Image 1 (cartoon, rainbow, N blue to C red):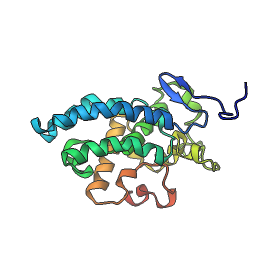
Image 2 (cartoon, rainbow, N blue to C red; image 1 turned 30 degrees about the vertical axis):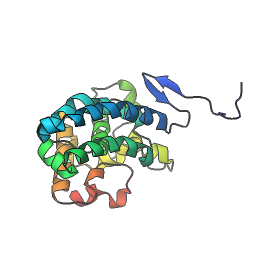
Image 3 (cartoon, rainbow, N blue to C red; image 1 turned 90 degrees about the vertical axis):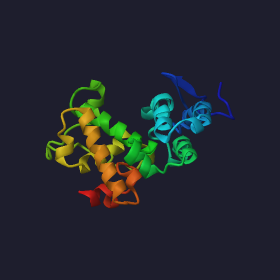
Length: 227
């Protein structure tokens, strides 16, 4: 039956992740933030008994993986939607008195937005190394004219949803130096990306959090000034 109040249909779950038919992923993020709230409160209640290093370790062990397991499903959501998720880590750092740069330098804890970009770039690199699901190879292919580059599927695409998805990250991957993209494992590739973020952060670059974001204009992207 066609519904006047919900003409596009209701949300559905796939592998435990709720999807809305508009792919805004607002429901998925809201559910995640709500479930993470009590976990965060439990950790923060113990802060007078532990050092900052211990609290960060608890956060990484009990909450970080929970916040990130839906990354590939929600990556394309808008900044407004994802800011609610990013706020969980921001609240944690604020309550223990650690800023984002100190968290990165001292505790190797990058902002969630940066971690999402690195995770999805790792998916692309895994595909290029032919270690991931073969279905992804249809989206991430070498350019025959420029062997060190990938074919950018968003070059002629104006759809915001596609440009901020993993497909939009192809342009970012193509901006990385060959010494990074030729890494033979995903872990070493992502370690090189973490080093780039650390260099930008310690140099005081105003957009270091978005070092690999496909949401920024390519012409003025932070990677343009780094290499």
